[in-house]
Length: 192
Image 1 (cartoon, helix red, strand yellow):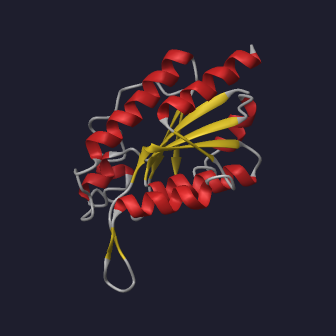
Image 2 (cartoon, rainbow, N blue to C red):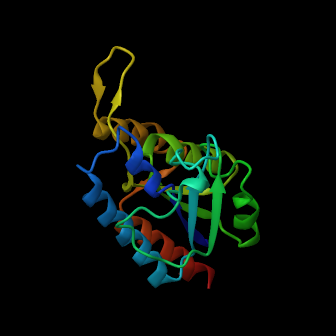
């Protein structure tokens, strides 16, 4: 089965958000970059998805006019098989990504990027509902602490674990970088 890596919202915009933290970023980028490098080496297409929303003014870091809707510093450079700009949480809403994936004969998606519980999880659920097999590469996703309704901080690690719990076996297969690459390479070999 032909696979495709989605690199979702790994963009400079996040550095300008008040919740942005460098704490777990190096480990995330190491995993994300290893996944990209492995896919490129195996001939697995890598798709870049960027997020743009809000007023189209230079002061909005998620507006194209800001110049921040571009790769996050530290992300491995790669030649994308395709690039899509999304305006909703799911990368499959209004972007044409679903059409492109179908035209390319893609059966499995490797999901990675920022934010674990938001755009990565939403894209995973949507893709699963549309019939794609999804490998959710948890270590190659990244999120930030959030404040709960009661005012307490919910750590990013707890948010990621919750996402893994609700996706596993229902919407996706949880994979490490190594597992996702092995599955993608095995699928490529079977299709050849």
